[in-house]
Length: 350
Image (cartoon, rainbow, N blue to C red; front, top):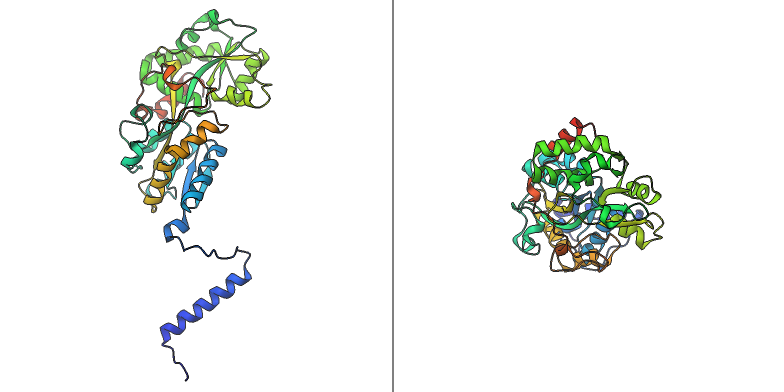
């Protein structure tokens, strides 16, 4: 018996046929036999990533394997991506923002662009490793250190405080990377702890006393080569080099200022979900995953040598435990990157 189709049914059948022929002619992989994911999961989330690309890729691979949710990364640095999100506002295509340091997170938070972090995720990260506002959360941490050349300095000759580097006795003897987000985060902590006048005075002395290098690795190499006696960097550059050949750190040791000194600042890497995201559930799942045990274990066992901050995961055993660093208490939500840029520009460092 001949069958008759209603116009709508005929159109649907024709459309399906065209799609099927298009699929056959494309280079796309064969359709999985697994149940179809939700439309949001299939579309995935977009992460603006200012963390180390290899670390975030490890998180993404593990998360996608567990959940089936696709993640697209757009990589850049803290300041660049923070300002980009601020400029894009509610039209940003980003679902999640990850940084190496807190000031860029505070920049986006102060623009009112973050959603609240899910309570289950907040509960995974101790209060000292996240902002008081809970508009984003800590995902990792790094410690400020004074990397010094062991052939030029003995322990009793090391500065007792980062503030000592402003004295004439250290003129021409130390280095940093003032243009980097890492160093600017350290200055943000100094500003919060010591105030504007003291910070500006220190920065002006730094302009006269220190040598500027592009990047922490380059500054550490200069210390290793004896170009300078020491440099303010983050700890993981040393451990990363030691885990490879050690050729750029063989003459280097790390000095931890401790004693709640501004130079003992522990910078919190941040993660937040954009309020404008159309994939709130998936974005929150991603943040919960990387602060959970599986995500934090990537920090403990991987090659980033950054500190885990969530789910009770211990740091790589080669690192000085976080609790022993005697870091000053700084609310990451209060770190002020625009003011730091203003002060560093006034001091002639930017």
